[in-house]
Length: 216
Image (cartoon, rainbow, N blue to C red):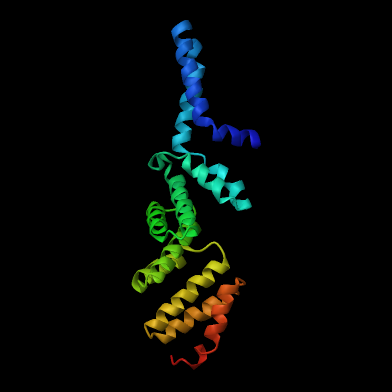
């Protein structure tokens, strides 16, 4: 696995080296002796730009090594050349990194690109739309936030924690709209997810204090 990751990391330069050696061999001995080097070089360069090195991000992400993830993403010079599902994953990662750096404008731009491309997994698309919805709510754009979060719930989410956050956000949106029956329905759905994240649990406890007093 380590050897394979090394090949991926240096694939472009190995491909260029193979093409240079192919050119020299072609000049000295003809095309057919150089054919294999041409073939290897073209495949290596093509896969670097078409597939990219995103496979390498898994290990540093698991270790929380954000700096290494950023270095790997920086190896992708032309993201628009990437295969569509991989391009979507690239923009999702860029958006998540921007959010971690509190650069919400860049995060929104990248996540919208990923959302427009779609995801190979519906749950991935749902997670993107949930993030976009939460950013819209932070900006006070409740209409856009509701639209994105509804789309996230329709697409499906990766885990019950995210589902709880989405339903709780919808409950708060409908509370603001004074549509109390819908607010209660989404609140019950959020609670049924049995989230364990402290922030979500605290929000549910806070709503518990007065949700039963609300008409509807």
